[in-house]
Length: 229
Image 1 (cartoon, one colour):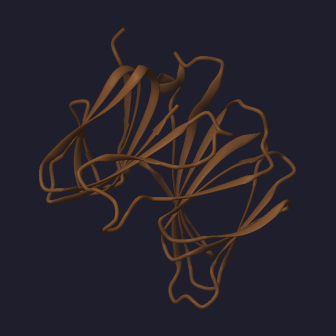
Image 2 (cartoon, rainbow, N blue to C red):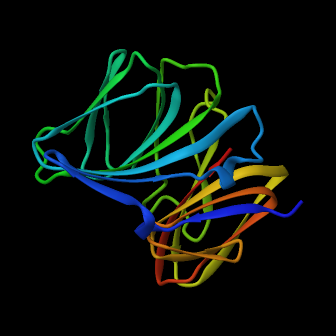
Image 3 (cartoon, rainbow, N blue to C red):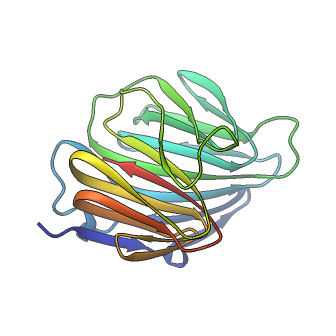
Protein backbone atom coordinates (compact mmCIF):
# COMPACT_ATOMS: atom_id res chain seq x y z
CA UNK A 1 0.00 0.00 0.00
CA UNK A 2 1.40 3.42 -0.97
CA UNK A 3 1.88 5.90 1.88
CA UNK A 4 -0.91 8.45 2.33
CA UNK A 5 0.59 11.83 3.21
CA UNK A 6 -0.39 15.41 3.90
CA UNK A 7 2.06 18.31 4.37
CA UNK A 8 0.92 21.07 6.73
CA UNK A 9 2.80 24.22 5.71
CA UNK A 10 3.62 26.70 8.47
CA UNK A 11 2.30 29.68 6.48
CA UNK A 12 -1.06 27.94 6.02
CA UNK A 13 -1.90 28.10 9.72
CA UNK A 14 -4.67 30.55 10.57
CA UNK A 15 -3.43 33.18 13.05
CA UNK A 16 -5.80 34.95 15.48
CA UNK A 17 -4.81 37.71 17.90
CA UNK A 18 -6.24 38.05 21.42
CA UNK A 19 -5.59 40.39 24.37
CA UNK A 20 -3.46 37.65 25.97
CA UNK A 21 -1.38 36.96 22.84
CA UNK A 22 -1.91 35.00 19.61
CA UNK A 23 -2.90 31.56 18.35
CA UNK A 24 -1.99 29.85 15.09
CA UNK A 25 -3.96 26.72 14.27
CA UNK A 26 -3.99 24.18 11.47
CA UNK A 27 -6.72 21.55 11.46
CA UNK A 28 -5.93 18.25 9.78
CA UNK A 29 -8.08 17.69 6.71
CA UNK A 30 -10.35 14.72 6.06
CA UNK A 31 -7.88 13.52 3.40
CA UNK A 32 -5.28 12.78 6.04
CA UNK A 33 -7.58 10.77 8.30
CA UNK A 34 -9.99 9.03 5.93
CA UNK A 35 -8.07 5.73 6.02
CA UNK A 36 -7.23 5.73 9.73
CA UNK A 37 -8.34 2.84 11.85
CA UNK A 38 -11.04 3.08 14.50
CA UNK A 39 -8.59 2.20 17.26
CA UNK A 40 -5.75 4.36 18.51
CA UNK A 41 -5.31 8.12 18.23
CA UNK A 42 -5.72 10.46 15.26
CA UNK A 43 -4.11 13.90 14.98
CA UNK A 44 -6.84 16.50 14.51
CA UNK A 45 -5.37 19.90 15.37
CA UNK A 46 -1.99 21.66 15.68
CA UNK A 47 -1.86 24.85 17.73
CA UNK A 48 0.93 27.35 18.27
CA UNK A 49 0.40 29.74 21.20
CA UNK A 50 2.22 32.94 22.10
CA UNK A 51 1.27 34.21 25.54
CA UNK A 52 2.23 37.73 26.58
CA UNK A 53 4.13 38.26 29.82
CA UNK A 54 1.82 38.31 32.84
CA UNK A 55 -1.20 36.97 30.93
CA UNK A 56 -3.22 33.82 31.65
CA UNK A 57 -4.71 31.51 29.03
CA UNK A 58 -7.84 29.46 29.74
CA UNK A 59 -8.92 26.64 27.42
CA UNK A 60 -11.99 24.40 27.64
CA UNK A 61 -12.92 21.38 25.52
CA UNK A 62 -16.19 19.97 24.20
CA UNK A 63 -14.84 16.44 23.64
CA UNK A 64 -12.22 14.05 24.95
CA UNK A 65 -8.70 14.57 23.58
CA UNK A 66 -5.17 13.45 24.25
CA UNK A 67 -2.90 16.51 24.45
CA UNK A 68 0.84 16.85 23.83
CA UNK A 69 2.18 20.23 24.96
CA UNK A 70 5.76 21.46 24.49
CA UNK A 71 6.96 24.85 25.84
CA UNK A 72 9.72 26.22 23.59
CA UNK A 73 10.27 29.65 25.20
CA UNK A 74 10.13 29.88 29.00
CA UNK A 75 8.68 27.44 31.55
CA UNK A 76 4.91 27.12 31.85
CA UNK A 77 2.59 26.63 34.79
CA UNK A 78 -0.20 24.23 33.82
CA UNK A 79 -3.32 23.83 35.94
CA UNK A 80 -6.23 21.43 35.53
CA UNK A 81 -8.85 20.43 38.08
CA UNK A 82 -6.88 17.31 39.01
CA UNK A 83 -3.28 18.59 38.98
CA UNK A 84 -1.06 21.67 38.86
CA UNK A 85 2.40 21.22 37.36
CA UNK A 86 5.41 23.12 36.10
CA UNK A 87 6.55 22.08 32.61
CA UNK A 88 10.04 23.35 31.91
CA UNK A 89 11.16 24.67 28.54
CA UNK A 90 11.87 21.78 26.14
CA UNK A 91 9.79 19.54 28.38
CA UNK A 92 6.90 17.46 27.06
CA UNK A 93 3.54 17.06 28.80
CA UNK A 94 1.10 14.31 27.78
CA UNK A 95 -2.37 14.17 29.30
CA UNK A 96 -6.05 13.65 28.53
CA UNK A 97 -8.80 16.27 28.73
CA UNK A 98 -12.58 15.99 28.61
CA UNK A 99 -15.67 18.20 28.82
CA UNK A 100 -15.22 18.80 32.56
CA UNK A 101 -11.68 20.17 32.19
CA UNK A 102 -10.67 23.82 32.15
CA UNK A 103 -6.98 24.25 31.42
CA UNK A 104 -5.16 27.32 32.75
CA UNK A 105 -1.68 28.23 31.49
CA UNK A 106 0.66 30.99 32.69
CA UNK A 107 4.37 31.76 32.44
CA UNK A 108 6.21 30.39 35.46
CA UNK A 109 6.86 33.11 38.03
CA UNK A 110 10.21 34.87 38.00
CA UNK A 111 10.72 34.68 34.23
CA UNK A 112 10.92 37.68 31.94
CA UNK A 113 9.15 37.67 28.62
CA UNK A 114 6.17 35.74 27.34
CA UNK A 115 5.48 32.08 26.70
CA UNK A 116 5.64 30.25 23.38
CA UNK A 117 4.45 26.65 23.15
CA UNK A 118 3.10 24.01 20.79
CA UNK A 119 -0.05 22.03 21.51
CA UNK A 120 -1.18 18.95 19.56
CA UNK A 121 -4.68 17.51 19.90
CA UNK A 122 -5.32 13.83 19.24
CA UNK A 123 -8.73 12.22 19.17
CA UNK A 124 -9.70 8.57 19.11
CA UNK A 125 -10.73 5.52 21.05
CA UNK A 126 -8.57 5.82 24.17
CA UNK A 127 -9.22 5.17 27.84
CA UNK A 128 -9.38 8.50 29.63
CA UNK A 129 -6.38 8.95 31.93
CA UNK A 130 -6.40 11.39 34.83
CA UNK A 131 -2.61 11.55 35.07
CA UNK A 132 -0.05 13.93 33.60
CA UNK A 133 3.02 12.33 32.05
CA UNK A 134 6.13 14.53 31.95
CA UNK A 135 9.10 13.86 29.66
CA UNK A 136 12.08 15.83 28.41
CA UNK A 137 13.42 16.42 24.93
CA UNK A 138 16.84 14.72 24.68
CA UNK A 139 18.88 17.91 24.22
CA UNK A 140 22.37 18.48 25.61
CA UNK A 141 25.91 17.14 25.60
CA UNK A 142 24.93 13.82 27.16
CA UNK A 143 22.74 12.90 24.17
CA UNK A 144 24.14 11.85 20.77
CA UNK A 145 23.50 14.07 17.76
CA UNK A 146 22.41 13.10 14.27
CA UNK A 147 20.15 10.36 15.67
CA UNK A 148 16.42 9.96 16.21
CA UNK A 149 16.16 9.32 19.95
CA UNK A 150 13.17 7.92 21.81
CA UNK A 151 11.54 10.30 24.31
CA UNK A 152 10.91 8.23 27.42
CA UNK A 153 7.35 8.38 28.76
CA UNK A 154 4.86 5.98 30.30
CA UNK A 155 2.81 3.51 28.29
CA UNK A 156 -0.55 5.02 29.23
CA UNK A 157 -0.93 6.57 25.79
CA UNK A 158 -0.85 4.61 22.50
CA UNK A 159 1.91 6.70 20.94
CA UNK A 160 5.71 6.92 20.79
CA UNK A 161 7.76 10.10 20.63
CA UNK A 162 11.14 10.59 18.95
CA UNK A 163 13.41 13.64 18.77
CA UNK A 164 16.50 14.42 16.73
CA UNK A 165 19.21 17.10 16.96
CA UNK A 166 21.16 17.25 13.70
CA UNK A 167 24.26 19.09 12.53
CA UNK A 168 25.15 19.46 8.87
CA UNK A 169 23.69 17.16 6.23
CA UNK A 170 22.93 13.82 7.84
CA UNK A 171 20.46 10.99 7.36
CA UNK A 172 18.89 8.64 9.88
CA UNK A 173 16.30 5.90 9.45
CA UNK A 174 13.73 5.07 12.09
CA UNK A 175 13.21 1.32 11.79
CA UNK A 176 10.23 -0.51 13.25
CA UNK A 177 9.75 -4.24 13.71
CA UNK A 178 6.23 -3.87 12.38
CA UNK A 179 4.88 -1.39 9.87
CA UNK A 180 4.29 2.19 11.03
CA UNK A 181 0.57 2.88 10.73
CA UNK A 182 0.67 6.67 11.22
CA UNK A 183 3.49 9.09 11.90
CA UNK A 184 3.57 12.84 12.42
CA UNK A 185 6.80 14.81 11.82
CA UNK A 186 7.26 18.40 12.98
CA UNK A 187 10.29 20.52 12.01
CA UNK A 188 11.23 22.68 15.00
CA UNK A 189 14.29 24.22 13.39
CA UNK A 190 16.19 24.00 10.12
CA UNK A 191 15.22 22.08 6.99
CA UNK A 192 14.55 18.34 6.59
CA UNK A 193 13.63 15.88 3.89
CA UNK A 194 11.23 13.31 5.33
CA UNK A 195 10.21 10.52 2.97
CA UNK A 196 11.19 12.68 -0.05
CA UNK A 197 9.08 15.59 1.23
CA UNK A 198 10.73 18.89 2.12
CA UNK A 199 9.95 20.42 5.53
CA UNK A 200 11.06 23.89 6.66
CA UNK A 201 10.81 25.30 10.17
CA UNK A 202 7.23 25.07 11.42
CA UNK A 203 6.11 22.64 8.68
CA UNK A 204 4.46 19.32 9.56
CA UNK A 205 4.02 16.04 7.76
CA UNK A 206 1.34 13.45 8.48
CA UNK A 207 2.00 10.15 6.72
CA UNK A 208 0.65 6.59 6.99
CA UNK A 209 1.42 2.98 6.04
CA UNK A 210 5.24 2.87 6.24
CA UNK A 211 7.70 0.08 6.91
CA UNK A 212 10.50 2.52 7.74
CA UNK A 213 10.94 6.29 7.85
CA UNK A 214 13.83 8.15 6.22
CA UNK A 215 14.80 11.50 7.73
CA UNK A 216 17.57 13.68 6.28
CA UNK A 217 18.73 17.06 7.62
CA UNK A 218 19.49 19.51 4.80
CA UNK A 219 20.62 22.49 6.90
CA UNK A 220 23.63 23.21 9.11
CA UNK A 221 21.50 22.60 12.21
CA UNK A 222 18.09 21.02 12.64
CA UNK A 223 15.61 19.90 15.29
CA UNK A 224 12.73 17.50 14.55
CA UNK A 225 10.12 15.71 16.62
CA UNK A 226 8.19 12.60 15.52
CA UNK A 227 4.97 11.15 16.92
CA UNK A 228 4.33 7.51 15.96
CA UNK A 229 0.69 6.47 16.36
